Amino acid sequence: MNRNRKIFIIVSVVFVAIVAFFAIDMARRTTAPWNKKKQIIRAFDVAAPTDSIAVDTTRR
Image (tube, rainbow, N blue to C red):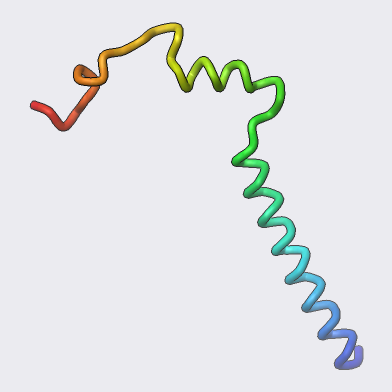
């Protein structure tokens, strides 16, 4: 294997690793379309509203 081929393989492996990292990062931050309703319910806690003062654990 000559020097140019080694450099090409190293650069391509690094490029694929970077692209994979960004793809995984975007997938973690994105909500699937079928879960959006569930996410809204969890965000606003419509089913069971709680008192924020009662939940505060630093107040004793």
